Length: 490
Image (tube, rainbow, N blue to C red; front, top):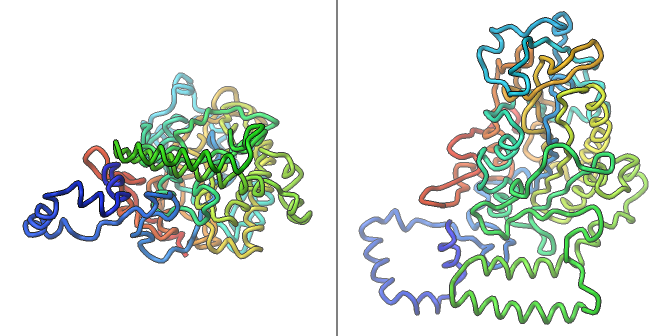
């Protein structure tokens, strides 16, 4: 659906007949020449409000109603957390065999090294759960929930640097300009709550700051979709949304009158030029007005029980922390937000990895497990899909100096680990196998297009049929690729 088509959908019948004097005859002739052109075309029920999504969706009965995506920006090391490789202990400081790398490209950060010495993980692994999944000592809380997870060890991507890799997994393309996953969800399915956006983004602080690789707004942007599907970032200090509060001297009644008059002006302008973005502007003003009440209630956790707060950990009461954002993600899910993205940075550990990854896991481990447990005890995990992971993985060979207790790892796109849980996902699964070096996939590869196709499937969407016509072709989140990962589906 292009902007002109979207504009047509919000026109009244009177406008239609007034502007298309010969249109009926042309339509009749077209139907005779090519009846296939007049098959049912899904309409965008969100054209006026941005709430209800496409009429044709879901394509089939969904298992999940909503998604919470926990994104570890910077690429957590699969070798130190999930992909247990005990044989590597025998390879300490030995060179990675050429037969393993097989000429695969590497980043400029290690391409100048004379050697690629193997750095075995310094962390212990143990089996957990009914199926005996291997989990690192770094993740004791998440290990306790492993029977609810599908751990995928064979995620792979072509991107080898952060920005194109994050853009790729978020939008289906390494080049900017495509809609993000959350924007596709908003466009296709809409929101289940008229007082909150369909797509919300939360940014997590680390030691009071952000740091790490920059995250650009296009990662939760709409690309060529209507801007009403843009992810709304909630801030951790001041007003959760900029300019949401009324300025001094303006009452809610004055704000309401101002919006009503502004809507009239925008409607008049729309009649003159037919720009569909004017409709988006009207819808966004109305959403902002409703959010003046809904957002303060959302972010007020004073009503949460001490039991729940304790479950998320000590930092849950500090706005902007990962723990606070995980609790907020559950509250957003309760209130009908379709897609919640929680970012946390500083996983880019090229050096001093053992200390840094221990710190990072200490930040995310308990809140991740608490979120799963919290959703489960409320009966929400059955229809909430939770996804965890980053943009690529880490090399088994060391970047920089190597000792028995310290090492760094470079970017590795050939295989890395993510986990999924909840609506539509088969629990207690470890899917795929990598070689002894966690370098290549040897069984059941899962490309990031496959991952996104599977996410859409859990929401009742055929990834090949959720499309948007732009510049003469039909675009989709999975581009021209992607297949469902049936082995992890319930």
